[in-house]
Image (cartoon, rainbow, N blue to C red):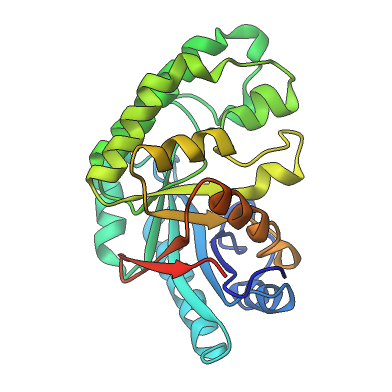
Length: 269
């Protein structure tokens, strides 16, 4: 690895519906790929139906704690969560947040309220500009809710709209509301995530891309997490170095991790 301080702040174990490997295997993968730390941030999409959130959270807590003890002194292991759509079911979301001792909570929106994940949409049947307008409005509401630590993959819908379906989008149309999202994060001392998974898929760039990361920096953003969004043990920490390259080019000298829900700045080196 190009950098010594490689810490992956977005990973999924088999506690996630789309994960494949145990928390222990994720940690093995992190070490194999030159990592110094990992946050295990399994999916908890709070608007899911017929889902036992408490059973999921207990199981994930036990497994991540076991991994933390097993790798003590070798790898920093953080107990995390990717809380999806928390603003749509706030009471349920707060129950999960307050019931377990998380180090780090990513806030995410994978679907608009009462709609499928953006992955499943047939964009020939929708006004893409309307979808994105509503999406960024909900991202702003999520930032204003101020119950999570970092805002995950800000441009998530583009993974499918542009990356998969090759529909070009003029993001400048949404810069005003994106700036409002950034300003809200900055005011609340919360972080923006640079999700590097897009570098390895059809999208071909991070989420958000370097231009938006620069915009966040220029507005005064200082807290920024970097995550692989890996669902496989052998992909943990991959691309984090490229994320750090973007941070440095945009003027950041540090990246952010969270322990006990408190931000810590780590030098990019």
